[in-house]
Length: 189
Image (cartoon, rainbow, N blue to C red; front, side, top):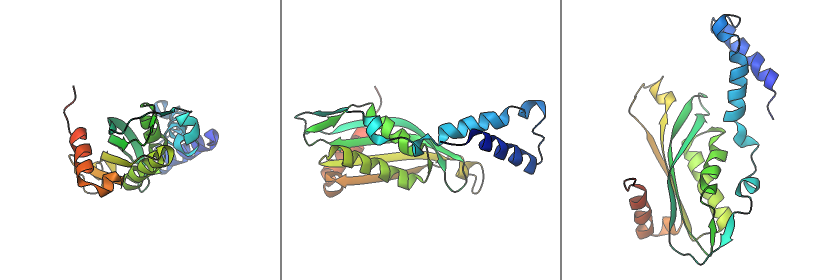
């Protein structure tokens, strides 16, 4: 686990380095708040997938696609330590096993709450679902807004990145992939 006091001290040093006074009224508790925030942002490093899944895998004679879409996520860009956030869509073709639907967003959270690249994050989610369920195929699509592109650098406010990871039948079959992409683009009810 993180050393809370060390994170506080590092934050105080950062405040001084950028020309601020950590003892002024608005900043007095900032080091504690930042330390607590970073403990939350980085909890994916200590999370255990087996504990997250928690025996929520069920034998089921189901062979049709299962999709959980519009899973909200946030992460921190490993290049600038600035947030990126958006939506994640996860689908799989079961092979006699299904997972509790709430576990898919929890898997997204585990990998999101680390310093990340969206490309790696997408692959990690797909590979984990593949390992846990051994399905016929897995598809993951992520759409993210990156503050490192919006706040600095190219400063493009309306840009977003889309990444995908297709495993098994989702990679091999254009028809399966098209069905998944069609489902995730449907309007919400």
